[in-house]
Length: 429
Image (cartoon, rainbow, N blue to C red; front, side, top):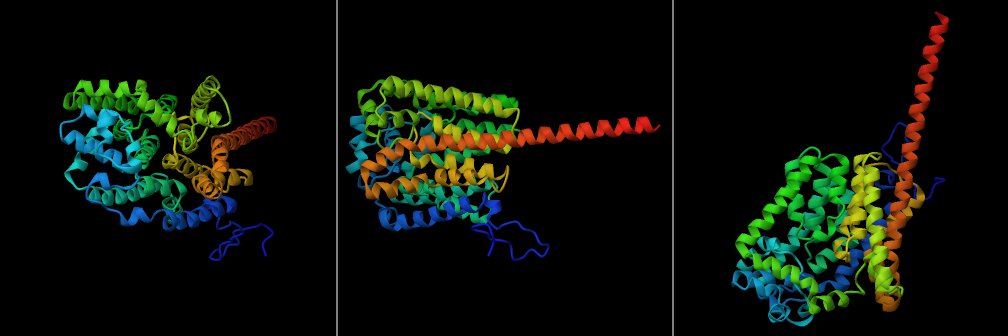
């Protein structure tokens, strides 16, 4: 038996290669966490997700509790000429039922281009199409991250995917757009910039993107993204009216919207809300959130000139999710994708990073499991989710810096050896 636990040595290697099967997947501990998470996730589809597969009502008022209902409701109102009423809670919710009456439209008006066409079809058809689209989104994200077939399946059965399919949220599309843009900003700047402009339909996840682009010198992508975003905003104002944008900005001071944000406090995974769950007041919450944002900006800027590009992409994606002013588990693909990009940098990871990375990958399933046993315990555990992500980011940064130091030492050693060799030749002459 191998001296190392979880040793899956390749049986096909005839060269005596001691590489474990798990090494390309981050290492045995991370692979074990990923596979275990996948098994639990699939089991939860059958335990909690029965409505997902069997409920395809013709109209939105009969929909089960899912975010797609919010998008469809807005789309049908826009198609009926009630564009401004989308941001009026009473009118908006009058077409919803059950738990969906707690939903609100939170996206800016250029998102209307993507949801108005939903009204052309009945709700059940749109729901079926959305399920397929989400699956395609995860496969696309896997391709962007250059994942193997096994890791693609792991991503499709991850906790983030589970929440994406259950809630029918659009976050996977935003994650894929941003990941593509960061990965191809240097080679396909126009397409990357357009992708970033589209991703602004959920603007809370883009805080670090300009820092990444400017730090890496991807000015064509930065300019394209800026102009394309301005273009989308201008066209939406022309099509749906300037008043639609005024109504959108008005939601942030609307008491009903403020109550909605407080309502989702328990489910929120932001740093600010995590501090609040532990008893911190609003001043402390906002201060720590601000410190985290500034720290993340500095981290990405620092890494732009030191780390391999895939490493910087991975760090940027995870940090973007961490500091977002709104974060729920349906946006966990930001962290999954970040970990996948780190697989392109170095494998296997050190054992500590494997364990931390495995916990971060598994957080959505870990929390729902704890919730099923003890709701109060899950509340306090959720407060630790950002802390665990910070620790994982810190561990990756230390790994990258150690690699950088080793590379610098190797370069210095080679330079010294070459100089010594030249000096020896000179003396011999």
